Image (cartoon, rainbow, N blue to C red; front, side, top):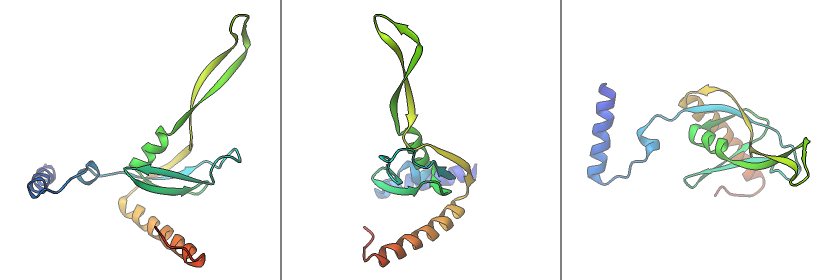
Length: 142
């Protein structure tokens, strides 16, 4: 109860100062350890790229990866429509009946929920590896 009152007071003080508060800053975000499925087709990208509010994160496939809840929701909502024909239901007028199916563009498995500290720790290791890779290739982080 005290935490809610303090959070509400901080929120109102920030508004008085003209600070823009986003939902991400006012609520505790959950973090997950997920594993994106390997690509099935050669046309699929090697890495999964998700963008939320202008922030882009890329994730490797087939490797357990920490992910904030907002990116998990983005991946869940990234779908495409596929069609399945039922060969047993032929209609002379319409031909084979087609069934519309929504599929996830980047299917994944949630391994478990993790804490924010665990997320930051795992992400720091990944950031070091990416920075080293970019330095070896003579590239810079954007």
